[in-house]
Image (cartoon, rainbow, N blue to C red):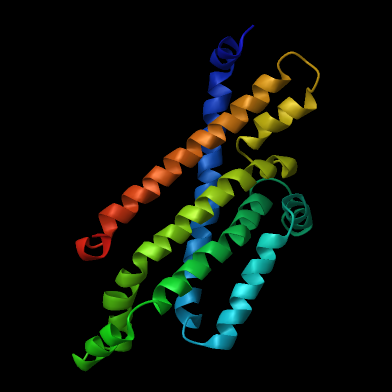
Length: 215
């Protein structure tokens, strides 16, 4: 049996695992954004809090994937819990760092002009700083998504969902005729998702960035 015949017979499993993988990544990314962006807004002006938060987020990113997933089993059990928390932790650094960089790169003269027009601090943040920083923030989201798509495969080690289960099945069946087919299915689907996610964020950036900034 060739690879395409094997894929045809195994397609429902590949499709479901691909959907589960995408959902898992979006859940981790969404939680990281919900926590990371407000945190970046709070710290980007002050040196010490900024250094501490970025340092901690950097430490998260250096923890080996298997170790982090394994450590989270004790408090969270198996399945979605440790998978989502681990992905959220890995996504913090690119999201927070890019948001901080984008906000700090806003021209102080523009902020002063907005303040001179009588805008409040919150109004300046929402109407001036965040829109100007948005392209850099979206780049952070793109980087985080690509990072999580690969790391999410490790979730299979803690009974998490996604394409890692196909890869793990292939490794478990090493030496059998179809072991490599399972591994290729999982890896190829992750690559396809990476292309789709990157295109989606590129489109998001184009649609949500003002023409003056994207020119």
